[in-house]
Every structure is written in structure tokens, then in C-alpha cells.
Image 1 (cartoon, rainbow, N blue to C red):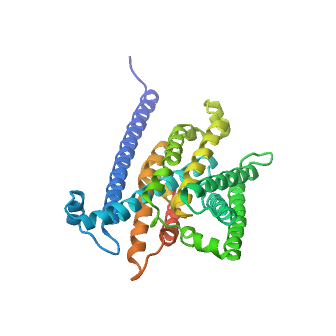
Image 2: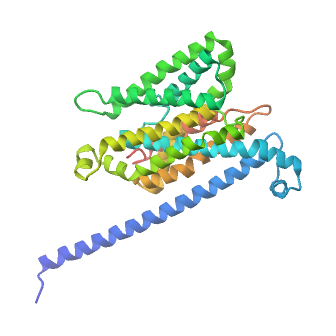
Image 3: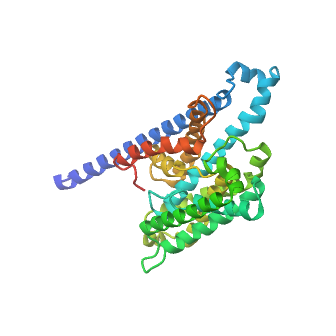
Length: 357
């Protein structure tokens, strides 16, 4: 049986297309593996530097001796100061990174993050109101006010952004978040200025800091973070369908309302807990998911996993820079992330496809 030219050419083209697709998948996997390897290595380096750099520098030999019980002074510094601070930086960074990735995914808006959507401002307002009305300043008390403020703000932003015939609109949601966030930030500033004692309590917290949170208070927020992480990874696969559009997601069998509600709950838990512990820290949830997409691609499962590793790198690196940039004292991590995050984000969005979801 002879094949004509018209039959042979399409077969050859199909084979070439299949080979090209397999090659592209191989390159994507290699890039993903390389990206994760570099992220893990950088995180380990940042953790070691976080344990060694401070007002009293510790060498790697001193850290090893402290872990073996041979250097009691170094062990006290690590146990009481550096280790809790490093752990808090990892937890806060991971929470903010995944919260930002969640918000960008379920709103299909590359500019969404806890700060721009007003969630940080809502949590800060509730904490200020709790401090002014009830004198609550401990983490065990502020966590509930932060959660309440974050939840109410999130649903208010979503209700405004989803109103109208067309339903949820990314631009409307962003504008609603910016407006509500500015409004609540103004009220919070008014409370702290009218009540100096509230200002004194919130001054360090409001700048975003991981320097002075006791270990027992860090362990008290672990259940909230664990629940947020579990819910986030549970909705990662359905969010891939939501990214294709509501109509197509429904045709693929995805439960859009259920997915978005769970995503909102997860993002609120993570953002509110991180804000209650360390104060409002900006740019982490906005910038890290964009950077992670460079080596993971659009799959939300890989984006969440990458953000879980890369976001703590940004927080710890900013905290380390804040310790050494001034001769006396430290810069809070929230200020440093703003200095680092703004130019890096500009560079990210200028790259082709960096903002694509």
C-alpha cells in the first residue's frame, strides 16, 4: 500500500509536534527542579545567616558548639532569640506567600495580595480597636481580633467586587480592596493618634517585625497556620480549573463557589495569623507568586509549593538586612520588604509573561 504525499506530510508534522511538546515538557521539568533546588538552598543559607548575624555575631563553630552544649552563652542566644525569630520568619513568609498566591488565583487578578485587597488593613484596624477598647496587646488576644477584622474585610471586598450583573470582576475587587484598606488605615491612624497608649503598643507591631515574639506565642498560632496550609493545598487543583474561567470550570465539573469559599477561608486564616504575629508586612504575597511562576509554570499546586519555600527567603533576607543596615538598632522587616519588593516587582512585571495567570 503506497502513501501519497498529502498523507505523509501531516503524519510527519504530527510527529514533530509531539516531539516538540515532549521536549518542552522536559525543559519545564528541569527548570522546575532547578528552581526548587535553588530556592531550598537559598532558604537554608538564610536560616543559617539568621542564626549567626545580629548584635553579637556567632560563627558556625559557635552554633555547632551550642547545639552540643559546649557553649552556654551561644545556646541561650540561639534558643531565646535567634531560633524563635528564624522560625517566625519562615512561618510568616510561608503564610503570606501562599495567601497572596491564593488571592491571585481565585480572583484571577495578578495584582491581588493581602495588602492591596485590604486584608492587612482590616486586621490592623481590628487589633487597634481591641487595644483601644479592651486593652488587649498579647498575641493570644490579638489573634482573634485580627482574624475577625481580616474575615470581615475580605467578605466586604468580595461582596463589593462581585456585585452587579457580571459577577466578580478582578478590577472592581482590586479597587474595592484599595478603597476599604485606605479607609480602615485612616481610622487606625486616628485611633493611635488620639490614644497615645495604643500608639505605643502598636508602634513596633504596625511596622511589621518578627524580632520580639515569644516562643510560646508562636506555638499558639500553629493550629491556625496548619489549617490554612491544608485548605490552600486542598483547593490548589480546583483553582487550576477556575483560572480557565467560570463557564469552562463548571463544564469540567469544578464547584466554583465551594472552591472560592475555601480559598477565601484559607487566605484569611493565613493572612490574619501572620498579621497578628508580625504586623502588616507588604509585598511578600504580591511579589513571590510572580517570581515562583518563572520556574513552576501556571499550575497552582507548584506555585503554592514554590511560594511555601520562596516567601520565607524574602522575609528572612529582609530581616537580616534590617539587622545590619543601621549601626545602632534595627529596621523592621516590613520596611525592608517595601524597599526590596518595590523595585523587584517593577522588574518582574516588565518581563513578558511575568504577570500572566
